[in-house]
Length: 230
Image: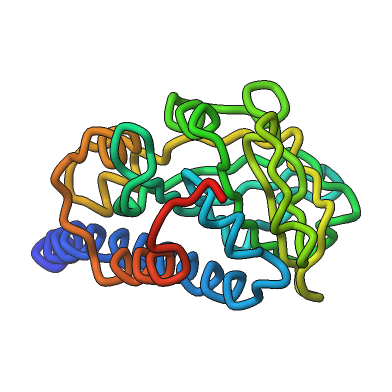
């Protein structure tokens, strides 16, 4: 009996890292699919706005936690443009956490997917600096859609937010109370070592990107291979 018990412990210890890696791969893969679906609708997120973006964050399946509390919490992925001016190729994905606070009736009982476009270099640097609260540390508004959005460019706006509930895309979701921070525990699982979002994106830390991470990069690179201010 003791031998079986010890064998079970060893098996569990060996299985846990693989389970954690699969969970992170699922997160990245789901984020890639959500982003691909959003970007395949140019009337909703115009390519011009994506081309201006310094960073893109995707938080799939964000759900309300706690009956009557309206608290939401999501885990997702961020990629930013590399180089000092953040106008180069997209970086490997970094894991991020989102605490939305209360979305009231907009969220309801269904899950919601979010895509955030960080439009300014200053906004991107603030996102990378640590825990950030939208509205206080960076300005955020619901992202414009349609042909009129192509010419939309307000240097005072750091982040454009897009969301999709079960019934389809909708504009106007407030993320004014949302806070975001690097999910360093998940980054360690994803890359097998302690590494922060800043190290991945700004310091070009050597990391081995999984197939799921490569898929996320492929979606972004295909949709926006080059940064543009136009």
